[in-house]
Amino acid sequence: MAFDATEQGFESLVVEAWPTAPHIATVGSCCLVGVVTDETIYIANCGDSRAVLGSIFRSTGKIAPVQLTTEHNAALETVREELRTLHPDDPRIVLQKRGVWRVKGIIQVSRAIGDMYLKRQEFNRDPISPQFRLSEPLVRPVLTAEPDLHVHKLQPQDKFLIFASDGLWEHLSNEDAVGLVSKHPQRGIARRLIRVALEEAARKREMRYSDLKKIQRGIRRHFHDDITVIVVFLDYEIISHGQVNDGHFVRVDSHSSDRNGVSRVFGNY
Image 1 (cartoon, helix red, strand yellow):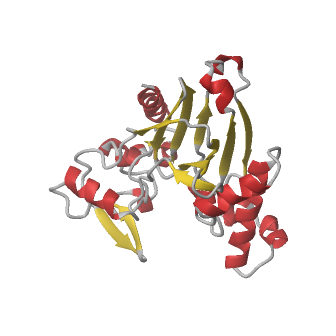
Image 2 (cartoon, rainbow, N blue to C red; image 1 turned 90 degrees about the vertical axis):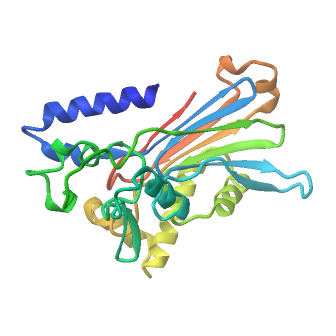
């Protein structure tokens, strides 16, 4: 599987770079991939990114959101229970720090590519920063790169898909995002979603959007997470006639905010 190959490739890079750049062991990425084939969309999700479908509900005639993925985030009780089940001998597998649930009290996501310091003991030691080191030996990985697979049979009422990192969903609900996409032109819609999310982030801090944009990248991480958005517009008529290989069954609009942290990887095929 591509996720396994990516994980193994990154692990090899960490092993090679450890003597000169050990901090790379603390780098990780969520991953969200979508594949459309035979009138079906397959979505593989590893981490806390999210895929949301914009679909017309026949009962109302309005476009409403259908969330197709579930986040692997310790903030969710289901994820905490999953971790406790996988690690029955570790009472500290999930801890609350400053009111936030985290795996081992360090990281919120329970699945990610990379983050080798939480997967192999030889990378959870000096010289990486103490903030990343566990107080007890790492007996087995506490994170996994295994994705969840979600399958959705496309219908004529399915109009578009929003793939986005958690930085967007922190400030916009599924309903808000789908509403924006349905009411504005396709071209530039990903940028518009990010702009609205950043405006909301600024509002929460009681500041102007223009002032937020002036803050240096490294510091802006304290105001909002990085955001990547891809919007895929679906043409069911072409998809249903088996013409998906000609490249015209979707139109894709994508955009990323300034990178302030771990990047997310998205794919549409």
